[in-house]
Structures are given as structure tokens and as C-alpha cells.
Image (cartoon, rainbow, N blue to C red; front, side, top):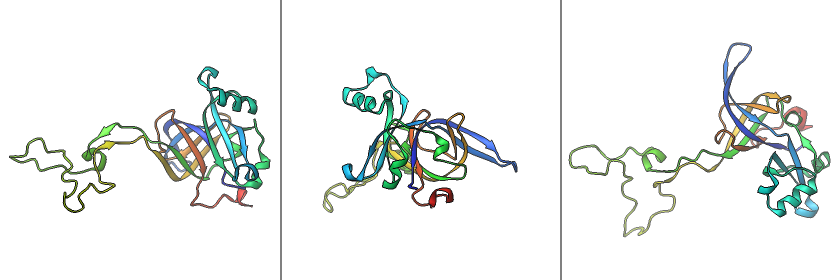
Length: 222
């Protein structure tokens, strides 16, 4: 079995209590059910993957090429579409138009990686973005308290070095939170509860895959 994954939408955070009284912070993710829109095969595409989609979208908000793809799969237009790489021998387990539910892939105790887009915080200065301490607040310092300081020498190297920490956009980047434990799977509500936080804001879309740095569970590794 390959390291399969699913698509989901972040609902928000809450907390649950274990049998021994421990409080566990969890993030609730609404997982699909995901619809298989297409299959990528090594013979035709050079790699093996499933194209999945979730959340229905109005046909008026879908362009014609995408509408043809959805009609070919026999499903309504989807708002969020991504490809999940899998092993070639696992392609036979899935068919175009098939719905994949959360309990068919994940189980309690699994370790997964969650990829999403972090919250955008706009254009920020170096103190907020990189935790610079700022200039000393003494007599004679005017309008320089939150500046970043010198950015280089005009002689050597005579330019601003790439990667220099300067003001700019904060957040709104693709981020992956690795090695997150699945606390609970609730197939009746299509919900997945994972330990801790994940990237993105409420109603943000995420991609969940089995962790690349951890072995697959015994039920899937055979």
C-alpha cells in the first residue's frame, strides 16, 4: 500500500479529554468525501497518482475545460482539486467517479503530514516578521526605532545579499506540518481530529498524506 492521502477543509480547533483525564488540543478537519476525478498512470503520464476533488461548486464559476473534466468523471464541479501520488500497483483499487471516505484511508493513531496555506498577515516590518529588537530608544534617535538597520556595504559586496531579512509580506505561504497524530476518526460526520494545530485559517483547504518520515501502519505496510 502506498502513502495515500485525502483532501479536507479546516473547521477549527477544540479540545477533547482522554480516559485518564488529559486535555488534548485538536484541529477538526472535514474530509470529503473525496471524489476521484482522474487517474495518472506511469504508461501514459510517467507517474502514478489520483486526482481528487472536494466541495461542490456552481457550474457558472467553472471554465469549460474543467467542466469537461468533471463531466467525464460523472460528478459535479469541485472547488478544490489536487493530485495525490500513490504507488502504481495501488491504482487498481480506485476508479474514476469513486468516493473515498475518511475511514477508508486514516485510522486513530496514524501519523500524517498536513499541507495548507498559512494565514496572510499583510506587509510587515522586520520587528514583527523576524523579531528584530529595533534601535535604542534614547535621546537623539528620531524615527528609527523600528528600522532594520544597514543592509550591506556599497564596496563589498556592492549589492544586497540574497535572503537579507527585510520588510515584506508575512504569511500566505504553502506550509506543511509534519508528523501529526490522528486523535479520532468520525466517519458518520466525515470528520478527522488531529493533535495540535495545522496551517491555514478556518475553512481553508488542506492536503493530508501519510507522514514521509514515519513508516506506514502495520495494517497498510503488508
